[in-house]
Length: 250
Image 1 (cartoon, rainbow, N blue to C red):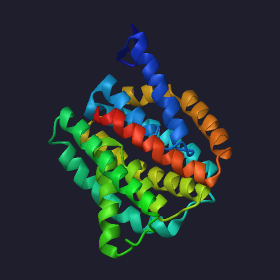
Image 2 (image 1 turned 180 degrees about the horizontal axis):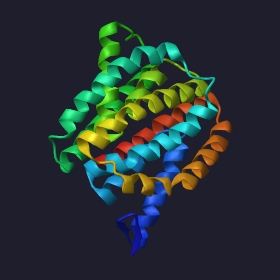
Image 3 (image 1 turned 45 degrees about the vertical axis):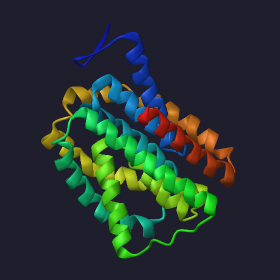
């Protein structure tokens, strides 16, 4: 057994924990979809609700790499519309997530990804351009982003749907995602610490152990994304989201 800051691992769960750090680092610099494999993997180790508190500092560490590297690419016209309703969604998710058991967490996460994929693939096949820019629609998307990221750290599929449907180029896509999530994830911290009590000093210190692995994932992710053209990147994102959905639902 391996014991770190009051958490016990066997060899297989410890290796899975390291894999979560690597995949999360990669996901925040453009290898989208792999974080949706990391999320249920962490849930297997720690349980659904507790895993969201373990995951959040790992995500923030990875966000720092992504937001720093793509700091000039973020499209703030999208961010200023999505962030305010997303903050509301976090508050709603904090209440709802406090009322439901682990099994329901996993079901909600799987349904969210599955529905997002159906819509995304439908738009891709139809070669449709995004038309939902009304205030009501933006409020809905923003609240869903906040709710899903609070309940299961799985807003990435919805953000992917929104930005790909807006035909956003690769680097702007990555930069916008990075700055959105570093903003929303920092906003979530007090809810995890004081309301859900899923982040403690020990869990934070445990997460810090993953910093070198997260950094390695970010480095590898940047190298991989540089070799992708726009079309390859687009279909890679869709493919990884499909894979993550299959992993979650099964």
